[in-house]
Image 1 (cartoon, helix red, strand yellow):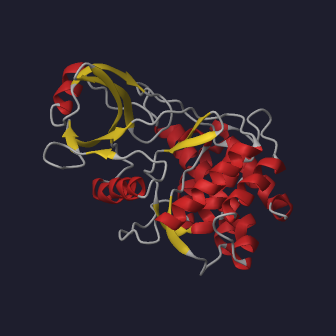
Image 2: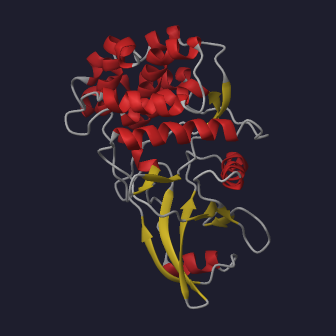
Length: 323
């Protein structure tokens, strides 16, 4: 989440007029994330305050993909999964345009994200991810990822000459720009609808209870075990020092397999899938590092965090996923 398109209170109020959500009381821009512009909106209806998330979809999110993303939220919410439902307009539309860009109003979910997860929280995330995979087995829509491994390798090749501007170590950690991952990429693993971006800041807790999974704007049709590898790579390392936490990784996979058992082929593929997950986040962060506008309300993320994790999985991947 972030703010690139700066809307006035009058523009936000006019946007809300299309919805039966009351009148605008406050709007606060959200700086986290890098893809779309977001505000925490508070309205008043019938003397009661209500909260929503207003998202304006920026260049990285294609308009034609929005029916997939927003239908997925409604599909999961209808199956009692902990995701926000979309708020429909008075005309039963899921989006409206603001300054020529599509925008959506999303249910606000209570809870906070955790920076230093416990094994209990990691296990809950594994359970929730498996439940998401099971709940979407009958989801009819499909979407190809725009961040495939070949695409990520190409993105890194395009910026390789500038790696030193980020960190002198980046070129040595990614000397081949991910070619080795691409060559070893597994085929014919089980496919389905995946979140593809289930970072700790995209999961909400109240106490130890998982209350929300948010930010589905990288969701796509893909390899189920890759979704687990993305989550493993984003949850299983300490923020301080970036050290691998085997207790978190083990709890995450245990939670997942309590609902959906991995096949032998899926488990064997996890080390290379995790390298691919890290490669994806390095590629997008490198691209965003150079593309972030100076006036954007955005927190730029350092690619080195996931470059180091990729190196860890390359050297210790089998041990990281040992039973």
